[in-house]
Image (cartoon, rainbow, N blue to C red; front, side, top):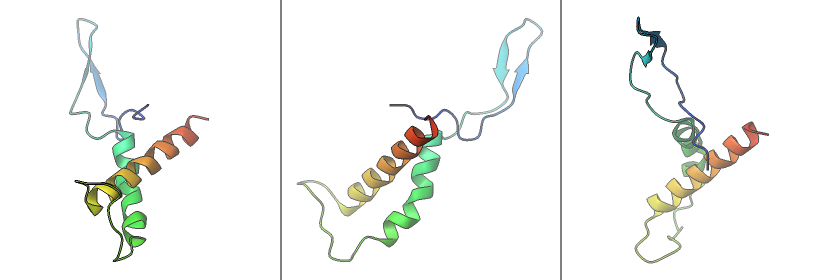
Length: 80
């Protein structure tokens, strides 16, 4: 499964020895960004009576799984 690479790539610096070095931290992946972007729509559709699907799971687990499933679908569509 692809994480889509960095969501906000940082510029790189070419060093005198020919090596390339990023100028900052890589930050979140595109998959993380897509999942975060999907959260408002997913949370807005969670009815008050929804129950988790398995033992030891919370509604937060279900929402997080749904957000990453949406992110994976977005990356797959982007790679077509």
